[in-house]
Length: 338
Length: 171
Image (tube, rainbow over all chains, first blue to last red; front, side, top):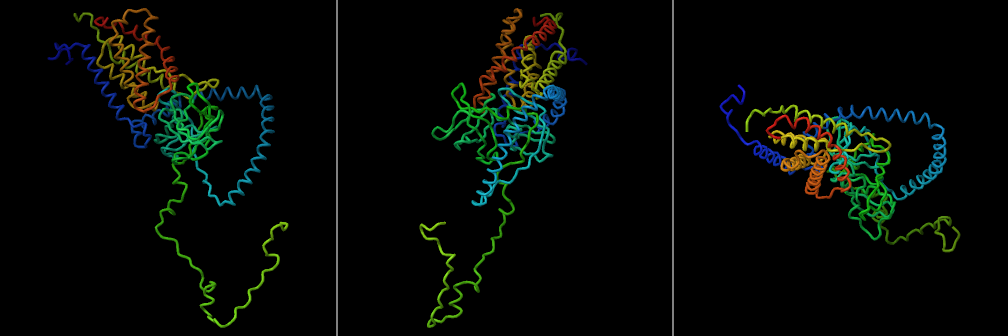
């Protein structure tokens, strides 16, 4: 039986008013969603099942849509490389000659660095494993800057992992499901990254605002920054490892210090996700949690100098003269040639 | 009012199909494609139905359809849940209130109205984001998205033209 043929068929309600009521109800639901949202906390629990499901569905769909564009780009690159081989060869030769000088310098510095490390007994960070992924979807609006990468929990990726491309830091993982992970870019309004100015070691917080160049906030120190200074991650707070390249400092039109991201200098088609969560994983956790105290080692009583008088107390007997050290072992005198 | 002019619209046609088209267009424009170093723009396609649905007729289903569309945008783009749902509803409410003033206007005037309503949606999104994230979004980025969204008016006009006369009670 159709509605209009039923007992309520003659019931008439003003549509404009019911539409207004529907609008208010929908708005209330929207407000409830916004208040319940915990995206800014960037916690694993805040990334709900709905988002995970949408990401999982979006990965193959967006991947298929992005494929023709990717193939076209590869085709254009191929054609370009075919037609510009000679000029590219010249450019590469020049670059290679320049790079050879840098290689020699890098080898010398590495050798020097290794010596310093061994002298100081430094414990350096172990290498961090990483997973490569392809970006399949990309949002660039003022209120959300995220990307979907086609690698997820099956590759060991967890929330908080830093993401890089070949030039520098891109962002970090805020949501993971099987086969896909959501990357919050440094430019997103919810992004906060502890960084430092490479030249002065001045600390700051890199704050996204939806634009292409995130702001540097809470800069400390007297004259801590100059135009073009290199900005790297500081590692403070254990969110990202120290020393990852971020960008170059520039003064914005609004008078604030901003960062031109290195990662934007190339396309972010492929990314590397560092399987790094915090500094705790760099230490041997089992060793740290070991309850057993190390054994107390004492001197061997037989070889101890204290045992000799105790073993043979002869107060009346004269002490044998101590042997003179050889002349070669003597300390050099002041002014003596070294 | 006589029911002789009543020709109830099929919700699947005037709500469902535009909704699916918006979702499809949003997914296509989210492809990570760069042409000569430039990325694709990111217009808010959902502004087209938000404007057109209110122009066509008042409806009970349309606000909920907009809310669903907004939630999809939030989840797909990775933004705060409810942000675009609320912003689109603000724009829809504005058109609904000003509907009598807009109806019958010339195409350039309607375009100006569309741009104005888009601006209101962007301002609403700006304010909601400020409240939610306690940070101010980049005005330049907001303006850029406003500009590319305002260019979508021909699609909204087409949708209004297609269904405006379907139910003469609301002319």
